[in-house]
Every structure is written in C-alpha cells, then in structure tokens.
Length: 579
Image 1 (cartoon, rainbow, N blue to C red):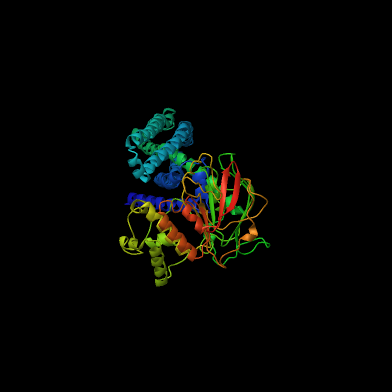
Image 2: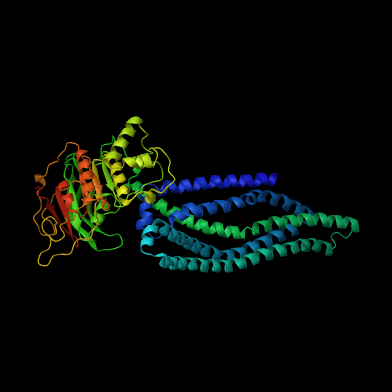
C-alpha cells in the first residue's frame, strides 16, 4: 500500500513540475516575438520546440522517479548512521561514508562524458524528428517531385548520425554501469570488514558464542542497511546523468529566453497582448493623425549579410494612399515588410509606427496563410479569440457575411457550423486559393486601418531587347506590373535613388477620414485576377488602405503609388497614372 502511494505521489509531482516548468518557458517564449527571433533569426539554440515539449517531459519524469529516494534517504541515513555508531563506534560510519564519497567521485568522473554525449544525442533526435515533420508538412510537393527515394536517403542519413551517437553514448555508459555495480558488490563486503575488525581486535572477547552471534547479526543488519541506502543513491547515477543532460539543454534555452525577454521589456519588441483599441498611439506632435508609419533615411540589410537591400529610404505612410512595392528577386521587398512589422531592425535610420497593431490599426497578411487549430469561427477572428469574447448573434452575422464576400459560404456547411470542432488539418483540407480567401475573410472581419501583404511573388520578367522597364514597373512584353504590399505611403525627401524625380507629397491627400488598411505579403498569389480584383474592391469599400507586394498589372487600379526597388540599395517612387 505504501509503495502504491509512493508511485502515485511521484506521478503527481511529475505532472505538477511539468506544468510549472512548461508554463514558465511558454511565458517567455511567446512574449513579444521571441518565438520568431529564436526560430528564424538565431541558430545558437537548436530545436527550441523539442526542448520545451520533449526535454522538459523527460526531465520531469526522471526527476520524479528519483524524488522518493531523494526525499526519504536523508531520514534513513541519519537513523542508521546513529544505529551503526551505537553498534560499531566511529569505525563503521566513517568507513561507510568514506566509501560512499570515493564512489561518488569515481561516478562523477564517469558521468562527465555521458552528459556531453547525451546533449548531442538530443540535438540529433530533434533534427531527425524535424526531418519527418518537414516531410509530413510538404508531403504533396514531395510526391509531385517523386522525391521518396531522395528523402529516404536523406532521412536515413540523419538516422545513422543519431544511431552512431547513441552507440557512443552506450559505450560511455558501460563504464558507469561497471562502476555502479562494482560499488554495490564491494559494499556488501565492506559491511563484513567493518564487523570483523572489532572481533579480531578482541573487543567482543568476553562474549559467549551465542551472544557474539546475536551481536554480529544485529550489527550486520545495521551496516548493510546503511550501505544499502548509499548504494541506492549511487544506483541513481545513470538517472542523474540523464537529468544533467536535460538540465543543460533546458537551462540553455531558459538563459536565452531571459536575455531576449529583457531586451523586449526594453521596448524593442512589444507584446501582442498589449493591444488596446482605445489607446492613442504615440506620435510626433508635428505629424497629422492620418500617419501610420514614418521612415527617415532607413537602410536595410539582411541579418546574416552586410549586403545593402535598401539605402536611405524616407517615406511617410498615411491613410488613403495605397502602394505597390516591386522589384527583382532579392532587392528587399519582403525585408521592408519585416522592418515595418518589427520583425527586423533597420541598420540605420528611424522607423516609427504611429498607429496600433490589430483591429482598426495595422494588420499584416503574410504570403503563406496561417491557421491555428480550432473551429471556423476561431480561424476568422484569429488572433482575437483570447482577447475579446464572442458577441453573440451579431458576431455570427458579421462572420457569415464576410465569408460570403470572400466566396467561402460553402465552408460553413463543410465544417457543420462556425463552432463545430474539426479534426482535420486546415492546410490539408483547403486549397491554396481557399486558404487565401479565408485570410481575406479574416481581414474583412478585423477591418484594420492599414493592412500589408505581398500579393504575387513572381520573378520579374526578363528585359526586352532594346526595351527595359516602362515607368511604373510595367514590362511591355510580359504585360504585368510588379506590385507587392498594400498600405498608403507618401514620399518625402529630396530625390529617389534610382534617378527619377520624386513624387510630391502634397499631391496626395487621404481619400477617407477613416481608412482601414492592410499590408499584404503575396496574399493573392493563388487567386485568379478576377477573384483578386473583387477582394480588393471589397477592401476598398470597407475603407482599407493597402500596401501590396506583387506582380500583377491588374492591381494597379487599386493603388496610387509604386515603390520600385532597383537593387544594391537603390529605389524610386512612381505615381500610377489613373486611366
């Protein structure tokens, strides 16, 4: 019965410790955009997802398995040390404690290489699991490429590296097992040595054989039980080595998260939970209230390179002025979106966001739609589920209306309602076009003041012999423009760095007193031009201001300006002529 309660208590400790430790790491991991920086911009901490999910689980389970012995052992050691002293004097306890200290030092030496190898094994475990996750997520593209044989070889290569490390770990653990078992065996011999010394010294010479036999039996039990307590702790050496390896990995992650959290608390990364619909954003007193972003002589480089993408860009992003961003691959179109969204920092200059993020503020629509697990309602209102409660039938009517506007009325039937839990993966069930339509339904529901996204990430068409690009980024041979995000930008400053005359800031005025907007990163690349135009028209009717990154000429009529990125940091701002 006591053993059953002991196991029950250890399991409760495991659940409680895992809950506390995981929630502690989550608190820092999801603060601001720490999760983005850790997974995308930094490579010093491998597989943070594995450390939070798998390493924490194993750490807590191993620690809980040791809890019973670690809690009870001090009391049994004190009791039997006293009994051993009463039976054998100082000789017994001193001999046994000295033996235990010697065994601990030897095991510590044997555990050192095991901990380092265990850390390496867990890293390779994470890499192997990530490879399988990569295949699961990209199963359809891999199948189209008939890539089964190639991926088989690549996955087996990671498996072989993992198994080789495990073999090395097993070889190192062999010496630890030899040390532990030797300590257990010699411990039983030590108990008889402790008893034999006083007998041969004649301490018990006045006792009869019967009394001596009784005394030896009693003292043997005390010494053997004391040694057994120590050998039980020594037997935990292999578990200790596992716990030490997990502690290293979890501790490394926690130190990184704490460091990044301190930086985010310094104002570098705002917390998404701090969205406030009624809070007035801070803005320079000289700027009008219709200004969303203010960029002053901004230069941008990729985090892992010193190659300049954009140099000395000065822009004022205001309501009612929609912008297309275009340029060849690698000129910094998406990088500018990341800087506006606060994911990257500019290498020089000032970037000020003068409006809030979220509903009635700024919303970014990435090229690849993001869907969480949950109901259809949760997909449409994301990421507001935990911030604002449902508002009843009125909210349902709005959601149904926006799904209909996005051409997704049938999706309600497929999911059997807005609040029906589904057991499928949204990425597997929806087509690329449906996913982008659902993203627009989310956009219509949130109705941001500004919205940014890349619309069509196509390669720039090759230049025509003797021709080149016409004003506004139009290619005469391909018949397409080169747009890419959606938000209103007004130019201010001297001249564009591509050599053309700048567009006058005074020639553009906000079209609406309240103009929601969006930044769109290739948000309609899977849609036809007709569907794309209809979604943009609805966005305009809702009063949104667009910053688009894309390459379709059909988008021109929804924008006022084109920001052309020419490469090597050069750029120019061109006004689109209204036909």
